[in-house]
Amino acid sequence: MLHWLVGGDFNDILFANEKQGGILREEVRMEAFRQNLESCQLMDIGYLGPWFTWERGRLLDNNIRERIDRGVANDALIQLFPSFSLRHLPHSFFDHCPLLIETEVRGRESRIDCFCFEAWWALEDS
Image (cartoon, rainbow, N blue to C red; front, side, top):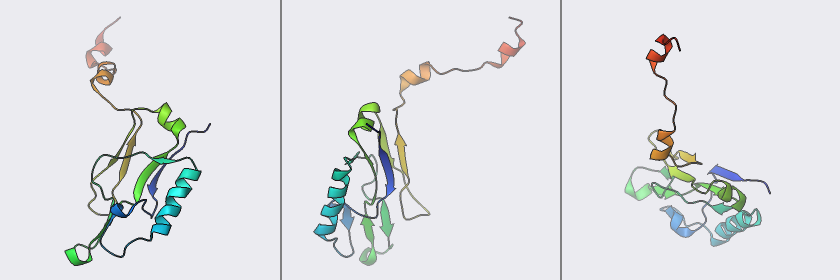
């Protein structure tokens, strides 16, 4: 089985609570998106960070926020990288949050094994 991870701007939402403000999304359209992911055997991989990933309009009366950027993967990839994470990073210039997908969670254990070069080694004859 192939390992699939797809991330980015899907321009669609899975559920109504993934949108705030503006015109309501049609349930038929959200259901079609869910069915497409299911037929491809892809599932939302979750995230850390802010809920909404896209925003338009700065004033309260015209502000629209949606979670249209996401990561989806198949079970084969999730089994291969069991400790992966996806983070919604803060955005400032663009209307989309950058997505950061890490396949390995770095902890103290990985720092112990890292190689460090000491400059004085170059002065040693051995």
